[in-house]
Structures are given as structure tokens and as C-alpha cells.
Length: 458
Image 1 (cartoon, rainbow, N blue to C red):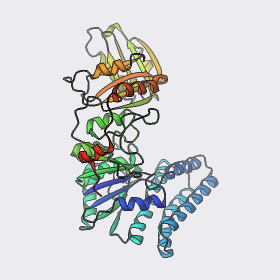
Image 2: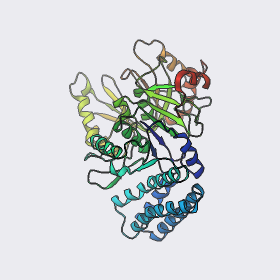
Image 3: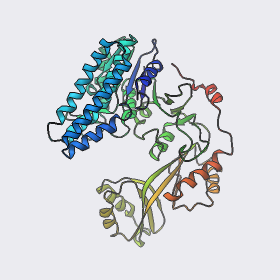
């Protein structure tokens, strides 16, 4: 069993859906296909919810009708047979009736979550009709709301998901292909909800773990996870292999292709994850597994929007429990710390959520002098950085000889060096690291990557 997830761009039009249908075709292998909403749909649904929140019912209703007509047009393009298009249109209208019904009552938090869930229901409806009606493939539409659930802490209920997914699959023993929705689920009270962090990628990983999959594939519009940010740095290239820990570090510190939560279930069960490109399916992409290569530094990522806080206090000197007291302040205000460094009389740390910053600072001033620096960026370097590896740190700091560094964190993880710079220095830092670390040697060629065993099994 393999799990294949396709993002919104991958299923963003009738033609894209046709291409995805060919990518997933593997008659001799059971597959679960997880779909996001078609590109642009979730943004439209968010806009509809915002209109209803401001009680602009007429505008919300009009936008739903425009969206409905757009989907009916896609159905006619995807399903040229009039009878097939009519059947699909009837199923699509069931979804749109749900949206229209929600305009007739004040919008609640529960109602907003129902609105946001409709995009995945629409995309899977169209895709399933195409597979079964046009291609005559034996495909089962699995409703994610029947097996995806959160617990009372709003975390995925892994035991429930496994039990109910296995029950669903057992009802279709011998069937080769399943289609289901990413992102959406029910909460502990049985109400429609969503996974928030990681969205459909998270769904794919959870489903892969629950189905005991041999591999999880995440198909997007980029050919794997790159060694640097291709939006601001020229000459980046996809990384062939990453360990789960390396991928999690990169995702947490800014690699946009992957959310840090999304691979946790796969990592727990040791299921390899491939990042692949729908637009270039022959590209080898990136393989994430329990294995890692020998390269000391594989990739760089950047996370913006950080606030740096420095607490200086003579009470720290030889004091027991000082750091615990500081951390408890952040715990009380449910604010995570990204990076931390200490000296004998000071501690510096960063946060990415400043919602409770005024209250946090008020409490911290009870410990000593507190200063704050805004507009900070963490630069994360990831690789096989075990202490026995010589020279990696020197290459980093030689590359950044002209960049002012606010904080440095090294040694807490065998996979990570973290640097804090002002956000105005982010781009030149990324470019300097690219020149100093990656342009010293030629990147692996696509041919050598394919020879390395990453050819697709289609």
C-alpha cells in the first residue's frame, strides 16, 4: 500500500486532474490518493466566511454561486459525457447546498470550519467521477470524516484513525484504489474540523501510518526540497536524501514545501516519504527516511518574524532554577521558544508568536533588565553535524565574515546550526552561505540522482 497526496496546484484544473489520474495508475498495487482542494478554493471559502462574519449575506451568496458555476464548468470539461457531467453536478450541488444553508444563520466557529471543509469534498468528488466514469477504474471514495478525528487536545487521535480506516479498507477488500480528502476531520465532539498544521500533508502521513503504508508520496509543484531558498538565491537544487530529523528541522525553520508536523507519523513508523513534482514527474525529488548521507551541511532555510528577548540578571550567577522560572513564564502564556543561548548572567531567546509579548515582558522584568529586538530571522543549517565532523562550523562562519550575527546555537542537535540575524540581512546571509557552502562543489546531476535509486515507481 502506498499513499499519494496531491496539492491544490496539482489538481487545480480539469487537465491537471487528468494528469494526476495517469500518475496514480498502478493496477498491481493498492494506493490511497489524498487530495487537497483545487488551487484558489480554500482562499475563496475563507473569503466567504469573512463576508458571513460581517453579515454581508448577499455578497457571500453571490460568491458561492460564482464558485458553483466555476465548478460546474470544470465538471463539463472533465466529464464530456452529458450523463456523467450531470451526475457529478448533482453531487457537487450537495456541497453547495451546504454552503448556501450556512448563509441563512449567524456564522459560528463550527459553521466556519464546515465552510473550510467543502473544498476537499469538491475536488475528490470530481476526481472520483473522472476515474470511475471516464477511465472506468475501480476506485473507492473514502470519506475522511468517517475515520479522521482529533482527540480532546485537538491532536490527531491515531488509535481511532487506524481502527476506523482499517475498517473502511476491510469493507473493500481487494479493491486497488482509494480516494480521500486531506485536511478535513472531525473533532472529539464529532463536529467537522480540520488539521490546521500541515493540512493535507499531515493527513497523508497520518493515513500512511494507519494503513501501514510502504511509502508516502507528497506531490507538489516543485521538484523536491531545495538546498536553499530558490526565491532569493540562484542556482539552488533539490536535495536527494534527508533523514526525518533533518527534514523536520528544515520544515520548522522555514522550508515552505513541508510543514514540520506533517512527517511526524511517518517518522514514528519509519515510513519513507518522497517529495515529488506533479509538473515534472520524471524528476527524482527528495527522499526522506531514517537514513542520512555524510554531507556535513545539506541545506539552509530561513524563518522570519522572530522577536529576540534578552534577560540580564545577576541572579543567574550560580543560581539554581533561574532558567526554569524563565521558561515557566512562556509556558503560562502558551508561547513557544525557538532558539536560546545563555551566559553566566544573561539569557537570550526568540519567539515567533508575539500575541502575549506585553504580558511576558512584564513578568520577565521581575528577573532583571529586559531588552527586545524585533524583525529577526533564524537561519537554519541542516546536515550531518555530529561533533566528530571537523570543519563544518568554520565554513559557515568564514562564509558570514561580513554578516552581523545576533545569536548562534550549535551542539543541541546533531543536525542543526541556527543563526539569528536581522531580517534586513536575511537575503545576503542566504546568498553568502550558498556561495561559501554549496558552490564549492557541483550539485548532483539529475542523471546521477536517478542512478542513485530514486526513480519513480508508477
